[in-house]
Image (cartoon, rainbow, N blue to C red; front, side, top):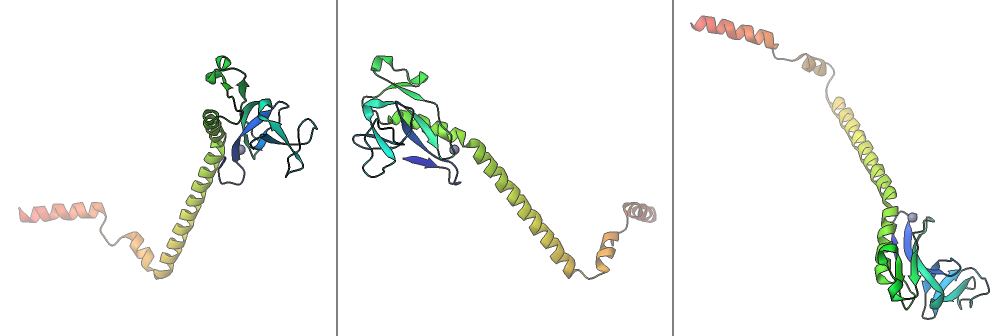
Length: 178
Ligand SMILES: [Zn+2]
């Protein structure tokens, strides 16, 4: 199971780490599949470039991402009394990624994608601003096209008297009525 940001760059998953440090591509009933042939493990029956590492030799778990990012190692300890989840030391009899660890790895993976998400948010905002400017330019151009020459100039000067003229008119009116 994995998580996809949908940008074609960040696609993450929780992996099992083999004793020689390789990250798993998946798991089966007998063990986890890792890339590369060392001769130390049986070759996968369908993918000739993969080996199957038994669960007993899984030393821990970590997040991986298609972009190349790797999360911190969760160490698999051999006994429950050695476990300390806060220090990323977990006991798991089976060896496949424990559910609790997978949840934490997913959160860690999501945090590493935050800069990418912020960049796409900025890119989206810039795109929206450009589209708005273009709409405004088009609207102004369309309006100018419908207003006849000359009318615009008259309107700018204003058909109404200036505030000063208005005040004088008002005062003289008051004098007449008294
Ligand atoms: Zn990534």
